[in-house]
Length: 455
Image (cartoon, rainbow, N blue to C red; front, side, top):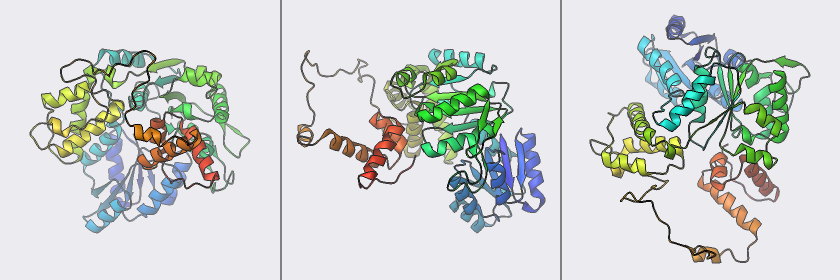
């Protein structure tokens, strides 16, 4: 774990740093936020920032967002100035830690950052086999492609491989290829020189250089634009990159792990993904089974999330009642582990009984079976007979409209339903994030009001 400490803190800074070092963290100290931003943009990565409340925390967090640097920020200060602590939280800090530093509190912060991202639960035989293969290939330098439905734990598996590898003491850097606009992803990966494009006010080290000596995770690599795929292929083959706006190549030593929730071979056939890059990434393939195929893990994961969010919300933990657990085991979990986590978070907050009761478990995916245990049956439809329409009025309203109009309304309404989150909207619509962005750009060019949203 890499800890960045910003500020002087009346001499307590060295004490906090020593505690972190004793707990296995790598520590970098910066005098102020300007020095800290310069370090981060020049490859001095961090997993957590501890910053003096006297620093301009709000401005610092805004600069991090502008530079697409995602880091949890914890404010700390000498004494018990409640107003300073509240303002730090309002400015975007995750927590406030009083100083002099308490060794156990520092340890708890470090543990929270490292454990939340690397907890691997695999009791079901289908998952045990995948973990056994991951452990076997982890010490090698082989590129790994992890595939599976959204929410199956691909990033957690990536971190597991890193911690089991010879590069465990090096950085683990993750890049979400689906969440970064196409025109910025090249700079994010390879970095840029000052003046390379509008807004490039200083040189920026890319993720390849930041991950030097460690592991680089290319999350949802199948969403990368085809033109950028060619540059990625060259970087993998030559083990060197060229920053945007520069002609000089830079040697890099990274291990690549890539993930995708799509059928990669189908994407290759459709011309959406380069075949040579696919084979370069697919040296070892780890297909993660969906949660519905891991029944032995549902109970353990459910209780793990209950314990986690009870502690996070300052509540006593609870066991899950047999009736509620049966609901969980019968669910099909389209959102997989991510959906189960959200369900358990909600359950611990609203549960009113000594154990998590069925009424506290709100399921969105529906059951795999009926209460009697028999598979849920759909009304029989004769061969060649059209499936009955459930809402005839809705179909009648489509008559006379073009396919393009219906598609446009469906895309915009889905985006609105997802509160502007383009990644979620694309998954619901069954299209790539790139296709969604192209459609939205088309609608903007046509003069339509496209709601602003998140990646």
